[in-house]
View (cartoon, rainbow, N blue to C red):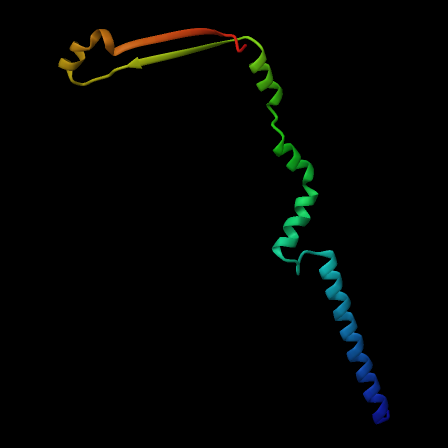
Length: 111
């Protein structure tokens, strides 16, 4: 081979390698998130999950809250107190008041 054709082949090989590297870089940039900033990735996935975000923003209990605000309902509860003491003198003094329970039921009319 001549000295001039060797130089042309080497130059073409270098250019081909550079073109392959550029194409690989473009494919990695466009096809993956490898070179994208955190901000770009956030907005990309934020836009993809718009439906989920709408569900999070909406109040899923809106109908139940409106029902409670507009309709009558009954609320019940229980309050209990049980005193346990190793001190017998204290326990004997507080016999009537140391164990009690209060049950309540209330009709609520929100209007």
